[in-house]
Image 1: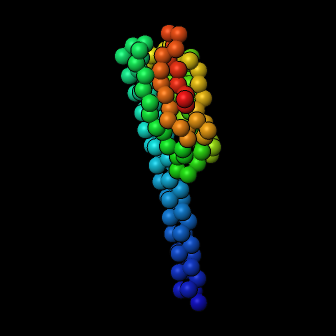
Image 2 (image 1 turned 60 degrees about the vertical axis):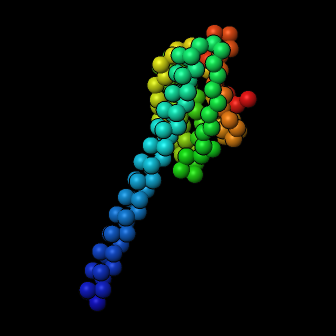
Image 3 (image 1 turned 45 degrees about the vertical axis):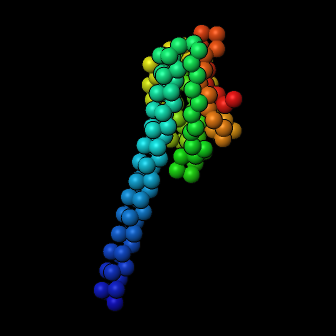
Length: 128
């Protein structure tokens, strides 16, 4: 009986450890995916900026990160893109140019192709 009890205790400990590691790995994967999305958008914005006023670019972003909805917006004061998932995780990416019009990409926008273009000496980001 004692051996069975010890076996159950050890099994439960390993199960708890496995669940914690699995959740940690999923969170790390989601954070990396958000970082890649931010870098892709930042690169597109910087490309449009460098190529001048007649240049525009369209990109596609995934509708979810790790099964969670997310939104992307700009913090113009810090020059950062903020990628915020519905589960509360926040990832930031720096953008080089400063003349970007504030924007918000949410689940409705992310269903469509995202356009980055010039408008009145500012770079605009949004679904067209």
